[in-house]
Image (spheres, rainbow, N blue to C red):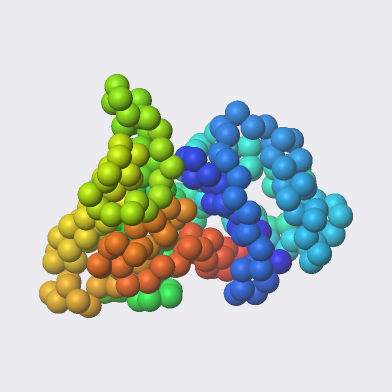
Amino acid sequence: MLLTIDVGNTHTVLGLFDGEDIVEHWRISTDARRTADELAVLLQGLMGMHPLLGDELGDGIDGIAICATVPSVLHELREVTRRYYGDVPAVLVEPGVKTGVPILTDNPKEVGADRIINAVAAVELYGGPAIVVDFGTATTFDAVSARGEYVGGVIAPGIEISVEALGVRGAQLRKIEVARPRSVIGKNTVEAMQAGIIYGFAGQVDGVVSRMARELAEDPEDVTVIATGGLAPMVLGESSVIDEHEPWLTLIGLRLVYERNVSRM
């Protein structure tokens, strides 16, 4: 079994692969203050209940693939793999790791590991040209060329950040649940805010993707648009440009990168 760990700014997603199939997944909050020992206890609690794994941490795990956008968490996860998964090969996505996707940006090292991993999975599953829209703490748009190269992208404030900002900076506004309202024209403050978030982000996705597609390909219709991330379902039904929804895109990318690097270890 392969354990994949995707550490985002807000949430950490763990996936368990049996071959090419994801057989189990968990989502926990990302806490930069957690120590390696705390993370190990958390992993033991989550995975100890799984029938395909043994009682001890590491039983049944043949490999680990990790990508983290939070450096302090990456440091502690490195310690977890060393102390608790001693003999298990672990691939941590960082500069120097073979991904198979050329990065054609001004400074390739500053591109988030999760964005590169998403590009790897998009090329493998759908081919290029493609645009990956990841609804996380930030909403990111990543462009992959017809030749499978990562050519750049767009970063916008995420849905949760926007909701939080409205609640904090608006004197008569408060934090709300992100849910689809009854209609676009809100009949009360909460529904008006929900409409602004849901339809505002759907419009943003349509506008940004359309402009990117025109730059990416001679015929924008050739571009496959893939949505991923925890909040993607909120926008899926309202956006007119999204072709595919793959909630485990990052985990699939981690599996692919692991397979391309494990033989070099």
